[in-house]
Length: 436
Image 1 (cartoon, rainbow, N blue to C red):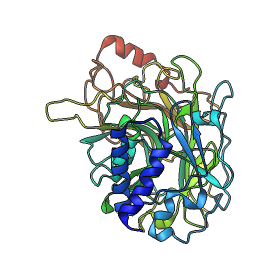
Image 2: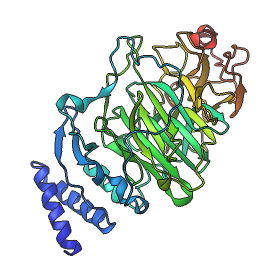
Image 3: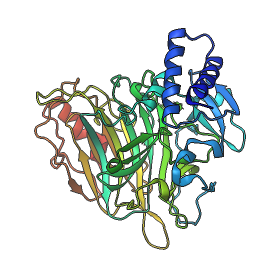
Protein backbone atom coordinates (compact mmCIF):
# COMPACT_ATOMS: atom_id res chain seq x y z
CA UNK A 1 0.00 0.00 0.00
CA UNK A 2 1.32 3.44 -0.89
CA UNK A 3 2.00 6.29 1.52
CA UNK A 4 -1.25 8.05 0.63
CA UNK A 5 -3.35 4.90 1.16
CA UNK A 6 -1.75 4.23 4.53
CA UNK A 7 -2.32 7.82 5.56
CA UNK A 8 -6.01 7.55 4.61
CA UNK A 9 -6.43 4.47 6.80
CA UNK A 10 -4.72 6.18 9.74
CA UNK A 11 -6.84 9.29 9.30
CA UNK A 12 -10.00 7.16 9.41
CA UNK A 13 -8.81 5.47 12.60
CA UNK A 14 -8.02 8.82 14.24
CA UNK A 15 -11.41 10.17 13.20
CA UNK A 16 -13.16 7.14 14.67
CA UNK A 17 -11.40 7.54 18.01
CA UNK A 18 -12.00 11.26 18.25
CA UNK A 19 -15.69 11.66 17.45
CA UNK A 20 -17.00 15.10 18.14
CA UNK A 21 -13.84 17.10 17.43
CA UNK A 22 -13.95 19.81 14.81
CA UNK A 23 -13.28 19.15 11.14
CA UNK A 24 -10.41 21.62 11.09
CA UNK A 25 -8.68 19.87 13.98
CA UNK A 26 -9.29 16.48 12.34
CA UNK A 27 -7.55 17.74 9.22
CA UNK A 28 -4.58 18.94 11.28
CA UNK A 29 -4.33 15.57 13.00
CA UNK A 30 -4.53 13.84 9.64
CA UNK A 31 -1.73 15.99 8.28
CA UNK A 32 0.32 15.19 11.39
CA UNK A 33 -0.31 11.48 10.83
CA UNK A 34 0.89 11.88 7.25
CA UNK A 35 4.05 13.56 8.53
CA UNK A 36 4.63 10.70 10.96
CA UNK A 37 4.22 8.15 8.18
CA UNK A 38 6.61 10.09 5.97
CA UNK A 39 9.17 9.71 8.74
CA UNK A 40 8.51 5.95 8.95
CA UNK A 41 6.52 6.08 12.23
CA UNK A 42 3.82 3.41 12.37
CA UNK A 43 0.69 3.78 14.49
CA UNK A 44 0.64 1.02 17.13
CA UNK A 45 -2.44 -1.23 17.52
CA UNK A 46 -4.22 -0.57 20.81
CA UNK A 47 -5.52 -3.45 22.93
CA UNK A 48 -7.49 -1.30 25.37
CA UNK A 49 -8.11 2.43 25.92
CA UNK A 50 -8.84 4.09 29.26
CA UNK A 51 -10.38 7.57 29.57
CA UNK A 52 -9.03 9.25 32.68
CA UNK A 53 -11.01 11.79 34.68
CA UNK A 54 -8.25 14.37 34.10
CA UNK A 55 -8.85 14.23 30.34
CA UNK A 56 -5.97 11.94 29.42
CA UNK A 57 -6.52 8.84 27.30
CA UNK A 58 -4.29 5.90 28.17
CA UNK A 59 -3.77 3.26 25.47
CA UNK A 60 -2.71 -0.25 26.53
CA UNK A 61 -0.22 -1.50 23.93
CA UNK A 62 1.43 -4.89 23.53
CA UNK A 63 4.77 -4.68 25.33
CA UNK A 64 6.59 -5.83 22.16
CA UNK A 65 4.80 -3.19 20.04
CA UNK A 66 6.03 -0.23 22.10
CA UNK A 67 7.96 2.62 20.42
CA UNK A 68 11.33 1.36 21.73
CA UNK A 69 11.40 -1.28 19.03
CA UNK A 70 11.46 1.34 16.30
CA UNK A 71 15.14 1.70 17.24
CA UNK A 72 17.17 -0.10 14.53
CA UNK A 73 19.45 -1.79 17.10
CA UNK A 74 16.55 -3.15 19.18
CA UNK A 75 14.61 -5.05 16.52
CA UNK A 76 15.54 -8.43 18.02
CA UNK A 77 15.87 -7.32 21.63
CA UNK A 78 14.44 -9.66 24.28
CA UNK A 79 12.76 -7.74 27.09
CA UNK A 80 14.03 -8.13 30.65
CA UNK A 81 11.24 -7.64 33.19
CA UNK A 82 13.52 -7.04 36.19
CA UNK A 83 17.13 -5.94 36.69
CA UNK A 84 19.60 -8.75 37.30
CA UNK A 85 22.13 -8.97 40.07
CA UNK A 86 21.74 -7.93 43.66
CA UNK A 87 23.04 -5.11 45.78
CA UNK A 88 22.72 -4.01 49.35
CA UNK A 89 20.68 -0.94 50.17
CA UNK A 90 19.56 1.16 53.06
CA UNK A 91 15.89 1.02 53.98
CA UNK A 92 13.60 3.61 52.42
CA UNK A 93 10.75 5.21 54.31
CA UNK A 94 7.16 5.48 53.09
CA UNK A 95 6.63 8.44 50.79
CA UNK A 96 3.85 10.22 52.69
CA UNK A 97 3.21 11.14 56.28
CA UNK A 98 -0.24 9.50 56.14
CA UNK A 99 0.88 6.33 54.33
CA UNK A 100 -0.74 7.19 50.97
CA UNK A 101 1.46 6.42 47.97
CA UNK A 102 1.67 8.77 45.01
CA UNK A 103 -0.03 7.17 42.01
CA UNK A 104 -1.49 8.31 38.67
CA UNK A 105 -4.97 9.75 38.13
CA UNK A 106 -5.91 7.28 35.37
CA UNK A 107 -5.71 4.37 37.84
CA UNK A 108 -9.19 5.34 39.07
CA UNK A 109 -10.64 4.52 35.65
CA UNK A 110 -9.06 1.14 34.91
CA UNK A 111 -5.83 -0.78 34.43
CA UNK A 112 -3.86 -2.27 31.57
CA UNK A 113 -3.73 -6.07 31.14
CA UNK A 114 -0.58 -8.09 31.76
CA UNK A 115 1.69 -8.16 28.74
CA UNK A 116 0.87 -4.53 27.84
CA UNK A 117 2.24 -1.13 28.79
CA UNK A 118 0.19 2.07 29.25
CA UNK A 119 1.00 4.89 26.81
CA UNK A 120 -0.55 8.33 27.21
CA UNK A 121 -2.23 9.20 23.93
CA UNK A 122 -0.65 12.29 22.44
CA UNK A 123 -2.76 15.37 21.87
CA UNK A 124 -2.82 16.94 18.42
CA UNK A 125 -0.23 19.40 19.73
CA UNK A 126 2.10 16.59 20.81
CA UNK A 127 1.64 14.72 17.52
CA UNK A 128 2.68 17.84 15.65
CA UNK A 129 5.55 18.34 18.08
CA UNK A 130 6.75 14.81 17.37
CA UNK A 131 6.40 15.16 13.61
CA UNK A 132 8.20 18.49 13.27
CA UNK A 133 11.89 18.36 12.51
CA UNK A 134 12.51 21.57 14.45
CA UNK A 135 10.24 20.98 17.44
CA UNK A 136 10.96 17.30 18.04
CA UNK A 137 13.63 18.27 20.53
CA UNK A 138 11.88 20.57 23.08
CA UNK A 139 15.20 21.59 24.63
CA UNK A 140 16.68 23.11 21.46
CA UNK A 141 14.80 26.39 21.70
CA UNK A 142 15.69 27.10 25.35
CA UNK A 143 17.83 30.22 25.61
CA UNK A 144 19.29 28.81 28.83
CA UNK A 145 18.45 26.00 31.24
CA UNK A 146 18.59 27.06 34.88
CA UNK A 147 19.72 24.52 37.48
CA UNK A 148 19.42 24.37 41.25
CA UNK A 149 20.57 21.13 42.85
CA UNK A 150 23.36 18.87 44.00
CA UNK A 151 25.96 17.23 41.79
CA UNK A 152 28.24 14.42 42.97
CA UNK A 153 31.26 13.89 40.73
CA UNK A 154 33.02 10.56 40.45
CA UNK A 155 32.26 7.23 38.76
CA UNK A 156 28.84 5.95 39.89
CA UNK A 157 26.65 3.01 38.89
CA UNK A 158 23.41 4.58 40.10
CA UNK A 159 21.68 7.42 41.91
CA UNK A 160 18.46 7.73 43.87
CA UNK A 161 16.52 10.02 46.21
CA UNK A 162 13.03 10.83 47.45
CA UNK A 163 11.73 13.91 45.61
CA UNK A 164 8.87 16.01 47.00
CA UNK A 165 5.83 16.26 44.65
CA UNK A 166 3.92 19.53 44.12
CA UNK A 167 1.69 21.37 41.67
CA UNK A 168 3.39 24.30 39.95
CA UNK A 169 1.17 27.37 39.71
CA UNK A 170 3.12 29.05 36.91
CA UNK A 171 4.96 27.53 33.95
CA UNK A 172 5.14 29.65 30.82
CA UNK A 173 3.27 28.05 27.93
CA UNK A 174 6.40 27.46 25.81
CA UNK A 175 8.72 26.30 28.63
CA UNK A 176 9.12 23.46 31.10
CA UNK A 177 10.11 22.92 34.74
CA UNK A 178 11.35 19.57 36.03
CA UNK A 179 12.66 17.83 39.15
CA UNK A 180 14.78 14.74 38.76
CA UNK A 181 17.56 12.29 39.42
CA UNK A 182 20.14 12.36 36.64
CA UNK A 183 23.11 10.23 35.55
CA UNK A 184 25.62 12.30 33.59
CA UNK A 185 28.12 10.78 31.18
CA UNK A 186 29.37 14.08 29.77
CA UNK A 187 28.14 17.60 29.15
CA UNK A 188 26.56 16.26 25.98
CA UNK A 189 25.08 12.98 27.25
CA UNK A 190 22.84 12.09 30.21
CA UNK A 191 19.65 10.30 31.27
CA UNK A 192 17.18 11.57 33.86
CA UNK A 193 13.95 10.62 35.58
CA UNK A 194 11.44 12.44 37.80
CA UNK A 195 8.39 14.73 37.59
CA UNK A 196 7.77 17.81 35.49
CA UNK A 197 5.24 20.34 34.21
CA UNK A 198 5.09 21.75 30.68
CA UNK A 199 2.17 23.21 28.70
CA UNK A 200 4.53 23.18 25.71
CA UNK A 201 5.10 19.41 25.74
CA UNK A 202 1.76 18.18 27.07
CA UNK A 203 -0.65 20.87 25.89
CA UNK A 204 -2.21 21.36 29.34
CA UNK A 205 -2.20 23.76 32.28
CA UNK A 206 1.04 22.66 33.95
CA UNK A 207 -0.14 19.44 35.56
CA UNK A 208 2.41 17.39 37.50
CA UNK A 209 3.53 14.49 35.30
CA UNK A 210 5.96 11.57 35.38
CA UNK A 211 8.79 11.76 32.84
CA UNK A 212 12.06 10.32 31.59
CA UNK A 213 14.55 12.07 29.35
CA UNK A 214 17.60 11.02 27.36
CA UNK A 215 20.09 13.43 25.80
CA UNK A 216 22.93 12.89 23.35
CA UNK A 217 23.67 16.28 21.83
CA UNK A 218 26.39 14.93 19.57
CA UNK A 219 23.74 13.05 17.62
CA UNK A 220 21.12 15.82 18.07
CA UNK A 221 18.96 13.71 20.38
CA UNK A 222 17.04 15.27 23.29
CA UNK A 223 13.86 13.32 23.99
CA UNK A 224 11.24 13.24 26.70
CA UNK A 225 9.30 10.04 27.49
CA UNK A 226 8.66 7.87 24.40
CA UNK A 227 9.08 10.58 21.76
CA UNK A 228 12.21 8.80 20.55
CA UNK A 229 12.72 5.01 20.49
CA UNK A 230 15.17 3.51 22.93
CA UNK A 231 13.69 3.34 26.45
CA UNK A 232 11.99 -0.03 27.05
CA UNK A 233 9.07 0.18 29.46
CA UNK A 234 8.14 -2.93 31.47
CA UNK A 235 5.57 -1.54 33.92
CA UNK A 236 1.89 -2.06 33.11
CA UNK A 237 1.00 0.28 35.98
CA UNK A 238 2.74 3.57 35.15
CA UNK A 239 2.32 5.76 32.06
CA UNK A 240 5.03 8.23 31.15
CA UNK A 241 3.55 11.71 30.84
CA UNK A 242 0.48 10.85 32.97
CA UNK A 243 -0.52 13.05 35.92
CA UNK A 244 0.46 12.24 39.51
CA UNK A 245 -1.72 12.40 42.62
CA UNK A 246 -1.95 13.23 45.51
CA UNK A 247 0.27 16.32 45.70
CA UNK A 248 1.84 18.10 48.65
CA UNK A 249 0.06 20.99 50.35
CA UNK A 250 1.63 24.12 51.77
CA UNK A 251 2.17 23.50 55.51
CA UNK A 252 0.19 20.28 55.07
CA UNK A 253 0.74 16.64 54.18
CA UNK A 254 3.90 16.09 52.14
CA UNK A 255 4.26 13.45 49.42
CA UNK A 256 7.37 12.22 47.67
CA UNK A 257 8.46 9.50 45.25
CA UNK A 258 11.64 7.45 45.38
CA UNK A 259 13.25 7.89 41.96
CA UNK A 260 16.15 5.58 41.17
CA UNK A 261 18.43 4.97 38.19
CA UNK A 262 21.09 2.24 38.32
CA UNK A 263 23.16 0.15 35.95
CA UNK A 264 22.40 -3.56 35.61
CA UNK A 265 25.51 -5.50 36.60
CA UNK A 266 24.98 -8.17 33.93
CA UNK A 267 23.33 -6.55 30.91
CA UNK A 268 24.72 -3.02 31.15
CA UNK A 269 21.21 -1.52 30.91
CA UNK A 270 20.31 1.52 33.00
CA UNK A 271 17.11 0.86 34.97
CA UNK A 272 14.55 3.39 36.23
CA UNK A 273 12.68 2.38 39.39
CA UNK A 274 9.59 4.03 40.91
CA UNK A 275 9.33 3.47 44.68
CA UNK A 276 11.48 0.38 44.21
CA UNK A 277 9.38 -1.08 41.35
CA UNK A 278 10.80 -1.40 37.83
CA UNK A 279 9.47 1.15 35.32
CA UNK A 280 11.82 0.25 32.47
CA UNK A 281 15.37 0.60 31.19
CA UNK A 282 17.70 2.10 28.61
CA UNK A 283 19.54 -0.77 26.87
CA UNK A 284 23.20 -0.02 26.12
CA UNK A 285 22.37 -0.09 22.39
CA UNK A 286 20.11 2.95 22.83
CA UNK A 287 22.81 5.07 24.49
CA UNK A 288 26.10 6.43 23.17
CA UNK A 289 28.85 3.79 23.12
CA UNK A 290 30.90 5.93 25.49
CA UNK A 291 28.08 6.34 28.06
CA UNK A 292 29.35 5.98 31.65
CA UNK A 293 28.10 7.29 34.96
CA UNK A 294 30.65 10.03 35.66
CA UNK A 295 28.37 12.18 37.85
CA UNK A 296 25.03 12.06 39.65
CA UNK A 297 22.61 14.98 39.92
CA UNK A 298 19.53 15.72 42.03
CA UNK A 299 17.40 18.87 41.79
CA UNK A 300 15.38 21.16 39.55
CA UNK A 301 15.73 22.63 36.07
CA UNK A 302 13.84 25.31 34.13
CA UNK A 303 13.83 25.92 30.39
CA UNK A 304 14.10 29.70 29.96
CA UNK A 305 13.24 31.23 26.59
CA UNK A 306 13.09 34.80 27.89
CA UNK A 307 16.54 35.50 29.29
CA UNK A 308 18.45 38.26 27.50
CA UNK A 309 21.34 40.63 27.96
CA UNK A 310 19.06 43.25 29.52
CA UNK A 311 18.51 41.16 32.65
CA UNK A 312 15.10 39.76 31.72
CA UNK A 313 14.35 36.19 32.71
CA UNK A 314 11.48 33.73 32.77
CA UNK A 315 8.87 33.67 35.54
CA UNK A 316 8.47 29.89 35.26
CA UNK A 317 8.61 28.38 38.73
CA UNK A 318 11.01 25.72 39.96
CA UNK A 319 10.24 23.22 42.71
CA UNK A 320 6.95 24.51 44.09
CA UNK A 321 7.67 28.13 43.18
CA UNK A 322 8.82 29.20 46.65
CA UNK A 323 12.22 30.10 48.03
CA UNK A 324 13.83 27.86 50.65
CA UNK A 325 12.97 30.01 53.65
CA UNK A 326 10.49 27.99 55.69
CA UNK A 327 11.81 24.44 55.42
CA UNK A 328 9.79 21.26 55.02
CA UNK A 329 6.17 21.85 54.09
CA UNK A 330 6.87 25.20 52.45
CA UNK A 331 9.35 24.35 49.67
CA UNK A 332 10.48 21.32 47.69
CA UNK A 333 12.93 18.87 49.23
CA UNK A 334 15.00 16.05 47.80
CA UNK A 335 15.95 13.71 50.63
CA UNK A 336 18.23 10.76 51.10
CA UNK A 337 20.50 11.31 48.10
CA UNK A 338 22.61 8.21 47.50
CA UNK A 339 24.88 6.79 44.83
CA UNK A 340 25.69 3.16 43.99
CA UNK A 341 29.38 2.52 44.37
CA UNK A 342 31.54 0.76 41.79
CA UNK A 343 32.73 -2.11 43.97
CA UNK A 344 31.53 -5.68 43.62
CA UNK A 345 29.26 -5.14 46.62
CA UNK A 346 27.25 -2.61 44.58
CA UNK A 347 25.90 -0.93 47.69
CA UNK A 348 24.10 2.37 48.12
CA UNK A 349 26.01 5.05 49.98
CA UNK A 350 25.98 8.78 50.61
CA UNK A 351 27.93 10.78 48.01
CA UNK A 352 31.53 11.04 49.24
CA UNK A 353 31.64 14.68 48.14
CA UNK A 354 29.20 17.02 46.43
CA UNK A 355 28.80 20.43 44.86
CA UNK A 356 25.94 22.87 45.28
CA UNK A 357 25.09 24.14 41.81
CA UNK A 358 22.80 26.88 40.60
CA UNK A 359 22.76 29.02 37.51
CA UNK A 360 20.41 31.83 38.55
CA UNK A 361 19.84 33.94 41.64
CA UNK A 362 16.10 33.34 41.14
CA UNK A 363 16.42 29.62 41.94
CA UNK A 364 18.38 28.54 45.03
CA UNK A 365 19.51 25.35 46.78
CA UNK A 366 20.95 24.48 50.19
CA UNK A 367 21.84 21.17 51.83
CA UNK A 368 20.66 19.83 55.16
CA UNK A 369 20.58 16.55 57.03
CA UNK A 370 17.52 14.39 56.50
CA UNK A 371 14.61 15.84 58.45
CA UNK A 372 14.03 12.73 60.59
CA UNK A 373 17.74 12.67 61.58
CA UNK A 374 17.67 8.86 61.72
CA UNK A 375 20.30 8.29 59.05
CA UNK A 376 21.95 11.64 58.37
CA UNK A 377 21.77 11.16 54.59
CA UNK A 378 22.42 14.14 52.35
CA UNK A 379 19.27 16.09 51.46
CA UNK A 380 18.42 19.53 50.13
CA UNK A 381 15.76 22.18 49.65
CA UNK A 382 15.63 24.03 46.35
CA UNK A 383 13.42 26.10 44.04
CA UNK A 384 12.17 29.61 43.38
CA UNK A 385 9.48 31.68 41.65
CA UNK A 386 11.46 32.95 38.67
CA UNK A 387 12.01 36.68 38.22
CA UNK A 388 8.69 37.98 39.52
CA UNK A 389 9.40 38.04 43.24
CA UNK A 390 11.41 41.14 44.31
CA UNK A 391 14.16 39.40 46.31
CA UNK A 392 17.76 40.46 45.82
CA UNK A 393 21.06 38.78 46.63
CA UNK A 394 24.27 40.41 47.78
CA UNK A 395 26.32 38.46 45.21
CA UNK A 396 25.89 35.77 42.59
CA UNK A 397 26.50 32.23 43.89
CA UNK A 398 29.69 30.38 43.16
CA UNK A 399 28.78 27.81 40.44
CA UNK A 400 30.69 24.95 42.11
CA UNK A 401 30.64 25.53 45.86
CA UNK A 402 32.00 22.40 47.57
CA UNK A 403 30.76 21.58 51.03
CA UNK A 404 31.07 18.46 53.18
CA UNK A 405 27.84 16.51 53.44
CA UNK A 406 28.11 16.03 57.20
CA UNK A 407 26.90 19.54 58.00
CA UNK A 408 24.95 22.45 56.55
CA UNK A 409 26.39 25.93 55.92
CA UNK A 410 25.95 28.56 58.56
CA UNK A 411 24.39 31.90 57.54
CA UNK A 412 27.87 33.42 57.42
CA UNK A 413 29.00 30.77 54.88
CA UNK A 414 25.81 30.73 52.84
CA UNK A 415 26.54 31.96 49.28
CA UNK A 416 22.85 32.76 48.69
CA UNK A 417 22.38 35.23 51.55
CA UNK A 418 19.45 37.61 51.02
CA UNK A 419 20.15 41.24 51.81
CA UNK A 420 16.61 42.13 52.91
CA UNK A 421 16.64 42.24 56.75
CA UNK A 422 13.28 40.44 57.04
CA UNK A 423 14.23 37.78 54.50
CA UNK A 424 17.66 37.33 56.08
CA UNK A 425 16.06 36.81 59.47
CA UNK A 426 13.89 34.03 57.99
CA UNK A 427 16.89 32.56 56.22
CA UNK A 428 19.02 32.65 59.36
CA UNK A 429 16.42 30.90 61.49
CA UNK A 430 15.06 28.39 58.95
CA UNK A 431 15.59 24.66 59.49
CA UNK A 432 17.66 24.05 56.40
CA UNK A 433 20.58 25.98 57.94
CA UNK A 434 20.68 23.76 61.01
CA UNK A 435 22.26 20.35 61.62
CA UNK A 436 18.95 18.57 62.08
